[in-house]
Image (cartoon, rainbow, N blue to C red; front, side, top):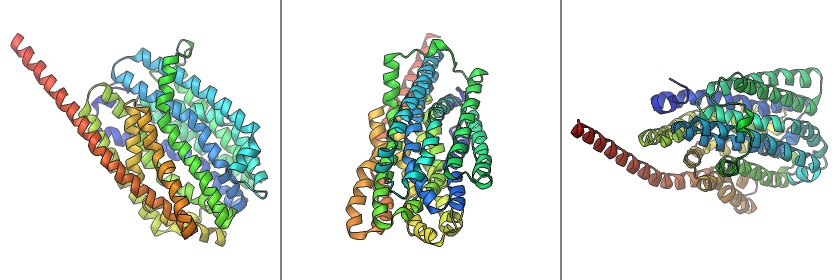
Length: 464
């Protein structure tokens, strides 16, 4: 069975879990970039170092997301093209998506370098953290074009059912990053510059590994110049579908900027460092959600293109159930031993206390994000970019940030932390109401499809 045909033939449970494990393992290694950096920085530089990396994090999050978003948009098209049996159009989509991601990431990282001081000041840098943040930020920008185009390749590999190859490139890169962090930070005492350099070298290595997959023709796509010239209609469609992924990450970046402002008000750089630790732990706990999201998109897109609506419904429901089960298990583990996990990053008593004040409240309703995540993934897989963008950015921009402004004047720091579980609960309820409509439409399509098949079989029997 060819890899992309697995999406339409393998049992949904087996397919979803196998792709989730591959995607989650790959995403875990990417999450470990910032986590491992933060662990080494926390122990060898201190709380000011964690705060500096957290201040630079929005740009490190946002710019590579351009490549990831382009890859997700192109991947949605690729999976549907493959479901329809049109390999040539899928290859043109890959070529346009990869080249677009590379060019955009190169341009935006150059822009970010030119306007370093205004950007970091906007993110909340102060006189005590600006120079530290710049020492990490300038080196990290070098890796952005590689990381962005690498993320786009990995998204498109998953779109054709090659999640394991995508995972391998991430695992290689992550292990190299750990080794280089130990060398540059712990042994050579290079501080934040060493952390950034380790990350960039690891990203370039992962990029090279993914390039080799295409050069060795292990994928149905091709790194051929005939597929690279931009087709305006195709570029427009890729960009439109990219909005869902980019909107989610842009929302996270905007949220982090707003949070930094409130945290500076209530506790200065110490609270920014505390949220930096919480953010890293939460990112690790969300890995199963992200893995299921990335697995659901190609499965849903392929089967929708092949008119297998029953499989789309099954993947939709099971993705949510698995996501809730995995993420609530992780929340329970962290709740039982929060000091242990915070201790990965720091031994400073004051920073541990500041982190404890928000950790449990923030992660309490975190699994409910799964409803929003799969809803946005569904719209992306169906080629409905505007609906996907609204779904993916609603929690951060329309609920969470307004709650910060509403609750903090009267509740102070506790209002900051309480905004998270309240926002997650509101979005979960609204998503469930929307899902009733989505599933009803899919069931109608499936019934029509069954009737057409039965009519065809009856006609064939009559003719014979």
